[in-house]
Image (tube, rainbow, N blue to C red; front, side, top):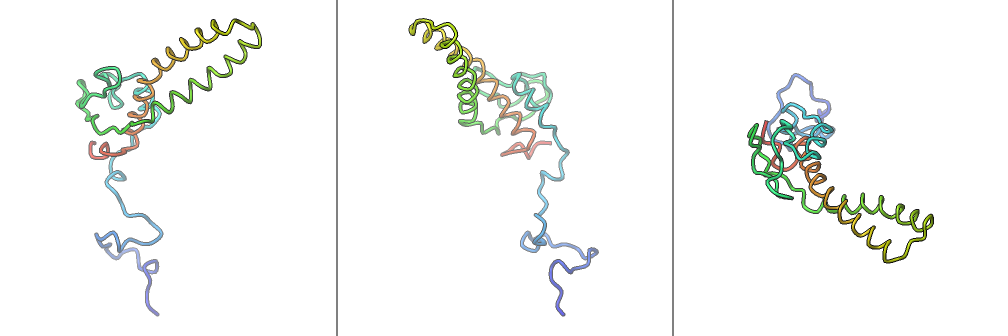
Length: 155
């Protein structure tokens, strides 16, 4: 009776070819051999616009531009791919805060429409400008912690 891949003894050396990997397990990657990074602390450091590695260096060099390297620990940060994620999260959060607030304030106090739209426009713009760079930092921190994109190469 011929042996299948799952019937092979465990003491046999494994081939380096990924096609020879057993069907029930994924081939080992370099990210599995590197030490694990904690996700939530990295997200929190990014939200505070600090380096996800050391937590001391500034993450941004301007309002939304991420630095290439941390000036404190020299961690490479140019690998980030935040793209439209921060904008989507900002819209989601601001919408979920402002829509109920608009409804409650209209039903409770019945202000003039012009006053209502002025107050809530300023509130939406202010909250969006506050959240956007922080959410971008949080996404960069998440990518760094999970070794996404090029972050897997650095130790």
